[in-house]
Image (tube, rainbow, N blue to C red; front, side):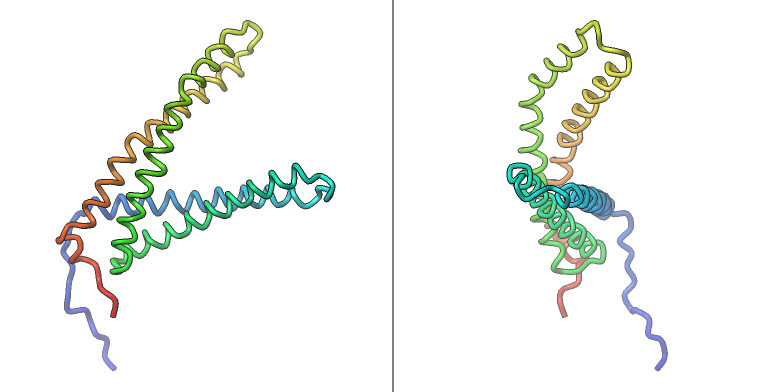
Length: 183
């Protein structure tokens, strides 16, 4: 049987939504790795604990449950993004929903919580830096923490409109037509 070539050739050109989808996929894959590594570390700490240490065991079990939950959510996001990159019909509405949920849950709610903690965090950094006995390395570590905090707020601030734009863009008829329906 001779090789059959596709009669349809795609000339969609540059599509920013695909780049955003790739970025989400890569960040979600990184999140999977982070949650898996943290869960592994928790499991190693949990194993040698005596059964009589119920308080610590309960706390570690809660942390492990959160890691597993986040890992499953990040893995689902990887699958959805891969499906969207491959233009599977089921992935477009799934990615739209995931984008809105990420924008609202991770971006708005998480960003608002960070922003509300900013005053307390900033005051704690200022009080710690005001101590005369604080060495240079500690001051540098505190400055690094402050920059990291600001970067997290900034990433969430930028991420919300990008995720909402992606959800809107995936709903456009021109983009919808690029996805294959189920056979």
